[in-house]
Image 1: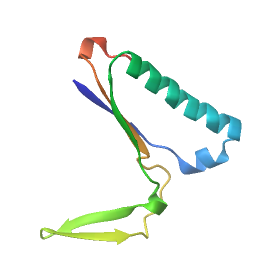
Image 2: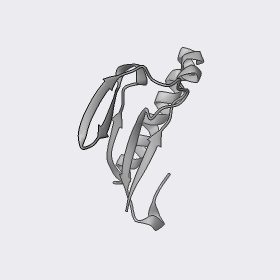
Image 3: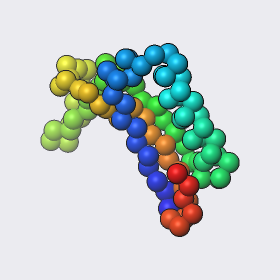
Length: 93
């Protein structure tokens, strides 16, 4: 079984963190990745760009239209994800 673990950062909260607290968040990600790599569950991870760096793709009548902002005001967005694989009964979190 594969699991998708999505990350939804809040930009305002992240911006308000001290450098020490922000580093602690990143350290937590590193520790999690180490744990799932050591257990053999790690499949992959991807960090995504923020809304200010992203495009919107909409398909209308089978034709894709790509636009850069403006975006609706956002507080949270998909900032990235992990994929891990493990039998349901042995998954480590």
